[in-house]
Length: 503
Image 1: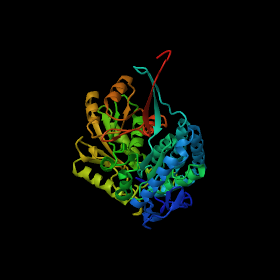
Image 2: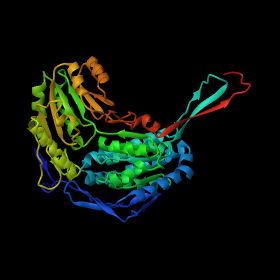
Image 3: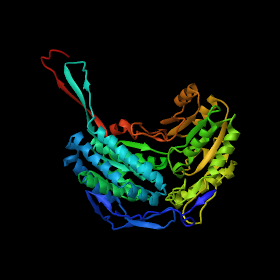
Image 4: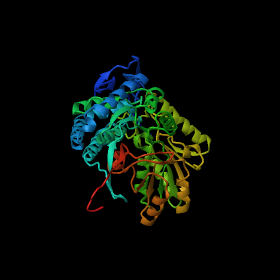
């Protein structure tokens, strides 16, 4: 296993990372928490403290919701034309483009994400998504109804109101705009609770929104912890909708809080245990590279990671050999190093959780082919890319979402068998299919119960492609016009018709 920790390699330059914003952003201003409390956010490369962040609690969420309510009920944002809102969102996207390197660096030091990928994909992708919704803001349409009586009826699409967004730590920038982009375009006011592990870029985006002309109170950011700030958002009587991305366990708590408060609608994007199915006719080298990409991207900290790999028996042995060779060549180390392909897990808790699952896999009888150990120089949260074979469908590592660089390889014979295996999970977020046979691809894609099916590709996200899960992976869509629609509600308006020449 190749390693390239910052302490042992000096052939790359780490940019100077300045943390400019550490306070809560409420009603257009950066403010301290009511309690005066702060919490530390740490660099997963070293475990060292980056900054102390204002710790939002219930009192701060109350202030943020009050500001959002005032902005929605009496402010200009929902009363602007969609065109005017779109122009401001375009300016917001332009400002993101002007700060790509600084924003990518914040997500690298806060989340351990690859700096090069942040600059090339995450931050520009956020600006792209924001522009998509900027362009959609003036294309929200109701419908004219063909009534069965002498009446004229039509529907209006109205912004839902104040939205609470609870954002995860694995893709701080991407998830921020999955939520905020369509909600702002719809005319809503929002309160964002970023993950306590990764608050830095969210606070920077609040600053850029203000610079772009988003009115005070429309976008509020309250860093804090789930049981306090997150719970306050979910249970708030004046929040009209909650959108949450995170674990299935916390998703249940969000739903319960919403039900026990004002019955606000909830959208959830939760865990996954996505299968990738490789058929005998696949190009072997392409399939091995695709599966490596599906499993180890973002150090496995991605809800749609392809971690259950089913390979047809005719190519299974050769696939295992090539997959192990490729994984063993992976360079694990400082994510600022352009030669590194895998950075550290986000924090000590996640690092230790992944190592516990690796130990469980060994104890339950799976065969460890490669990886499985910490790596580096005892600083930071680095784990080798790991592959298990001889995995049974009922093993813990085949059922639980590990959220780390762990691949479970399994063999199958027939299409019917692998469909059953792929669906043998409580999750249903995504799946991959690798085959040259269009009939097989069509059959399997229609048979797997998951929200996104990628054929001969993986992570094929696009602003126009709705994304969300089945089963215990949640409900509601991010991206596409489906996401805009979830921040709108439909109102029916009917008026009598008198002396009309036609109906």
